[in-house]
Length: 359
Image 1: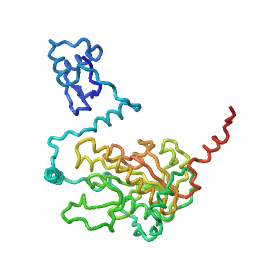
Image 2: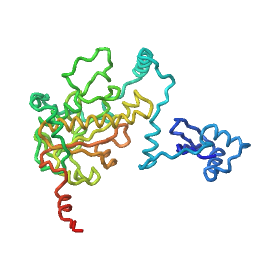
Image 3: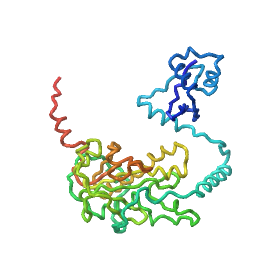
Image 4: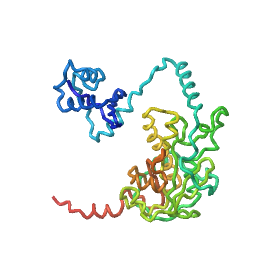
């Protein structure tokens, strides 16, 4: 017999939980079962067909007769567990036609809507709001989509010169705002699902939120701000921290002069509310990608240079945004400003150009 390679074990005193993450099955083991499993992990050849525990472990596919060829995987085990564990969602009844799907989906939505909707914000924000001017869409009418796509690039060389509050307002409205220009949403939808952004959102939940890093924006004091899409307004969370921006982004100090950036978070509680299966965690990152791309495209259309990263010093950023232990977590950062558009910072290029490449 062999140990199933698609297992992980959780300590849940007084028991152990053995989780088969490929088949989405879980088993609670008491001390006797846990000790026996430990013996078999140490030496699977000890498997005994007359041992009741051994037979039950085999019936549960914790022990298997034929070894499974390992999946080629060059990341760590956690990413493998996540990827395989969120595949092939268990479904009691797969709809066989569109009518069955419609009935099933309507029933699901009715059940969800019978429970309380998630709050507008996870953490209370200051009541005082800074209203932003309406987005001047006319400023973007002369910029073609093709031109914007070809112009977008990642820059790591910023001057630190200010951007205007009008540019910031346009960026926020078109990236995270609830668009007034969109077609009227049916009145039958609940308030939690009637807002529409420019980017697609899993389940229409708008699970992403935005927190501004403002260092040099004309008309705004430096600080950390929460964006309120329903009001197209800001609230000051805290003054700008003493540590430079690069310290919050895993030491990428070439970005310290950046005048304006956006921490994009995901409201896991919104996703939990509608989708109980962990596959929805994939959608958190997908939606964050949609939102970040929209930000980059709008910034490019406004004539600004852009930068993005998923390398966050998570604990520091969570503390900065007041999200420690909250069901809302920062996943990404995008920023923009003025600069020479160089892909690499001048310090790196100095090292590269100074290398002796003589054979």
